[in-house]
Length: 441
Image (cartoon, rainbow, N blue to C red; front, side, top):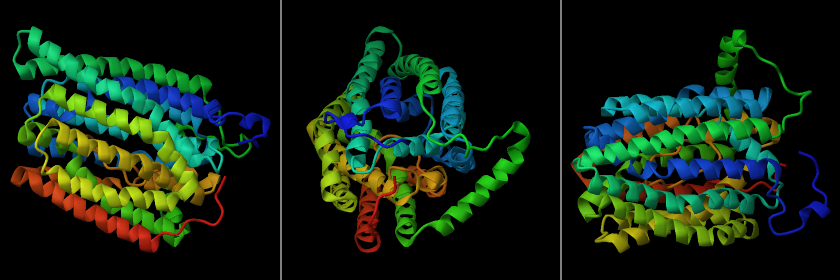
């Protein structure tokens, strides 16, 4: 990335240009299409005949799928470049949504979830491109804005999804489950088409950050060599990490297990135990998203002022308390308050982690390191568990499966266990992670 002149730094958002602008636009489009439907994914599985254990299983195999190709994505991002990998892989990812459109039973959804998560192996490259394109000193604010702008769409999207499902249930003459299935299939069709548009935008407008002279060229005949070198690079990258980065990996693995254990069951608990309707769950996401959006930029700016570690600690200490309180929710506004506070914890914790990790990793290693530990650190999810790195997928997959068993046994136990585990992670960050003295560019 070329040096930024003082003339180019005019305005509060001077760094929202080039790659960052295109990445934000693409995330806006994805958020509009997928956030309409993802908050209702567990309901979709149930409507197609899936049990609570099946919901945990589908989440589990989706997470596990990411294990296979993430190292390849990180390796190729560093060795041959970011942009083409991101663009062409986005095309494949879009086509992986077709099983969600055609599904007639929960097993087809399992196939779709496996394929879609398998083809997200370009995420390490996209994370590396984001870090490359954000100068040190504004990374906290930059990562916060890259989260906040799509969040503006995610505020509206679940309400649209809830309205769409409610409309079909009221007017189609079908049962509630069949009407939900029809509405969700329409939403997945829109998501598929949106994915193709996003792929085109990424291929046409993103700018490569790996120097052409440093990039290596691979053909399909090199596939086995690339696969072998990719997995060997995981071992080499772990050896390269300092103690703080290794601690972050351990923390992420612990958090991945327990967050994935609870993530698919927030909506089911709200519906089955608290008594919320499907459209009300969409409204919960609306109000929590609106509040989180209003505070996203101030909290992102706080990361740059306070420091990344202090910001991470703020979210990691609040999160477990709020999760523990969820089991005592008694109605719509109680659930809304809980999800809102979780959203705010994420809004300072994720930019903090993103900044902390980016500041520790030199550009030439970012793809490979992000393929191992991700870019967001710990994120408290109340829907699907959203990826990370190759070392996070096995514990997350196991956690999602365990979550289905635990929730079937006792819905409240899920929140108690997750809360305790994240508090332990917070203590590990406080005592074992140090910020770098100088940020990597």
